[in-house]
Image (cartoon, rainbow, N blue to C red; front, side, top):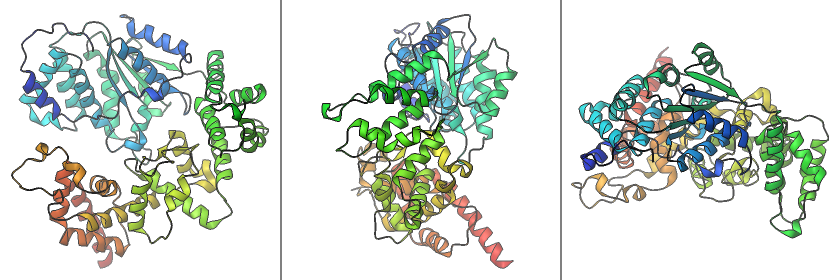
Length: 533
């Protein structure tokens, strides 16, 4: 942990813990060793960043800028692990498009404060006092208030010895679902840059991002004594050498009978990557994902040889090639199923398993097949979790999501998220109508607090029902002409509303009820106004 100035100061430890447990924070946005760089790769950039962190005269914040697939997140996780081992990591927060409902700009600073409290007893006490003095800070979405009252003011009362590193990964993924930026993101960016001078001199912030306009505009506008920018150079000799090392390591046969990929093919993969680690990673997965019975060289020849002979390639071309070899694009049934299932996956606010996706799908549309399994079981090179019915399904890289959602890039493979939201909305409401009931937690008495029942959330049904309760708000349209959807909402509001509220309470989502009711009030007002007109 980051060193305390003093560890024997008498604090009200129990009270501090109680206060901090109530502070809004994201538990799953931290370090992931599986995302770190392969040992021996990216050493130069990691050493440069480490030197910067330890330089007391350096600028206070640094942006690591790179295009999709350049390896920014792997560098961030490796740097975080390095400084965690030195007890100098204050917080690691990773944005992720698959978790936008939880990992949003409003949750960053409170999570940083929460994590810092776990590294320094004096800061924990100062933060707990601030929360006791102003209870609204526990769940406020006011980013300026979070910055000042959860970080700046408590930090003035304590001393951290040595450098303290805060890493915010994939800032570009803090954009809204439609890809646009928002006011909260702008406020957060302002705090992390213009506000950095308010933090102690030994605090350092690393932010990774694609070169997006708002980020570049801030970098250009602020004095270099406060922030700096480092752009990843895809064509540098060390990057090319690291990709070759990565490819050799990943394609080392686990079974001697698979045979080794010859030198020419190994180099071909490394060279075609053109500095993009994600390109090399996807190409390797394409080879490894092929069915058993073929050597590595035969897999390469089957899936990639002709593609590689076509000259320069890009991630988009690689994704297109993989999809073309996986699905029959000339089949209307296959393509319709692909677009529908992928739209459902792309619009999900939280990654869901095959079983949960199919359950919500079955509530929304009549189908005699497991559409989700039929599609995702063949996409191991592009999606994670495809081999297990209960594993969450998500794109292995954000660039694949970007590819599918941009019709100019994906063409015939384009996926319309509106279709996914429509399906998930109807499926979620019907799942709630079907699943909610009186005393859904099976409690013997109503006099026991929810927090006192350790397995309460496990009593309330399937993953699909829990998702429907927590994330319905993300799928409700602003207007619709679907009478089926409107009548389904009508059933929930008239016949099941108290049971629905009880489920939200059990799951800790009761705050979403206001949002949903406001959305529905607007939706029904628009519908009735349209009918009247």
